[in-house]
Length: 596
Image (cartoon, rainbow, N blue to C red; front, side, top):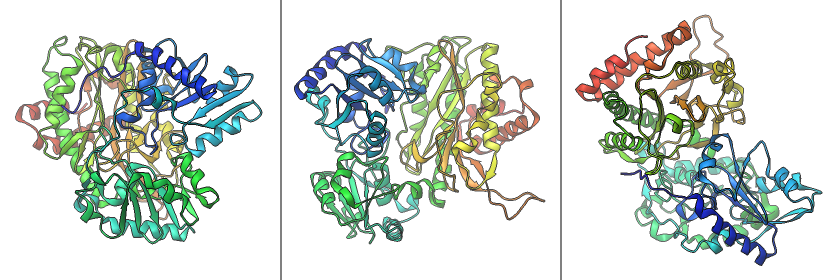
């Protein structure tokens, strides 16, 4: 299997590791040290070697950090992980609700007399450090660069990732890397930049039409790159990883060993484009006064998928939807109490593996039943594996990495007879998901402008959820992709070709969780008869097709428009997915998609 159910971190391991780290604080004459989730490339996902936060604290979430002081250690987590962190860290660590409480505010409270807090300049961005230093001004607390103290005490730290790199075929990429390099290089020149430093692995993989396997579940390769205004690229990657792609890269890409990166960056003629949100501090320091701050030049072009990428993603979703339908049909035939979470995960992966284009799952499948469903990013292990009991819900959030696209789908399924409170909350979540799916909006709006539409039905019941409504998704790349998001913090305007998730939810700690998720692609809206043809509007096209559990819907709570949308969605699901599944699953699909 792609997925394992091993226990990857234990709370009891935290105290001795914390003690060893504090000994290093003494040796360095520091009063604290920051341990982020990040690696030197500043992507969301990290390789085993860079799982410093999880190794030290036991917390395995995809965002957060730890501030270790001499007498207290705070684990900073956002709303997605406030239930999870309680089970994963020992009581020597203090969970801190972030960003409600900022690092600077917490440090000022814990260190009223000031002090020196160290950080690894490879693992933090200029934006992060500048913001913290400004907030700490006058406090007597100093942030200082230092060696990585976790690496000193992590005696069995895994080696650097070394997976071979492969060519991403033009039929799926839709544009050659030479064309991409020339196009983006010209844009740099127009902006007055001589070159740009690229640290994000998904950016350089997209730019060069390559894929890797350095990060679990994400087909990316770790490296650094410098894109010049001429369109030429200097690539800094271990030579052993490049054997299969040397001819593909060609004369426009010059390969170097990774250790040459910093010295090359120091010697660049400016202006040098750096993204303050993703470049490491040490790189910005090396460039010095030649910096031109700006966005990663690959980020927005990568987010706006071309026709080939959209077509591939749409096809991948149909095949993936067929696997999900096979799983749902099988699950519906099992008696309550006869299955565990791991059995569901294994069975779903079996159905996905029937597709030869499947390369991996796109993240560890979330299969949380009963109280586990309220843990938003729950990962089932051999120790937490729970039985699907009568009256439970199961949140099943999963996806696949296919050669032609990346999928991410969530369905919440009733086991036996669910309680009315869960059904009512499910119907509110569904109403919000439908409202967003139907939305037409003026071009120029961002996630912060429209996200509330997916939450409003919950708000009326004084309910909400502590994660964004949606995230960007790559084309056989990272399942979480920026810069676009459906979130109140996102200011990036939506553009045609962007793929995002639409996933409202509701979580009642200790009882149940609910989430419904489809992926959508932004398109230019066609004006209706009588509409203003001059006004540019956008809408969504749904990519994900799989039934939504009718047994959890309180029909009287749906208005006519929502009911019509759901019936049309189910009719199209039956039309598109029916020919792709087994006879028994097709019969089940007909029942699951009947009009409400």
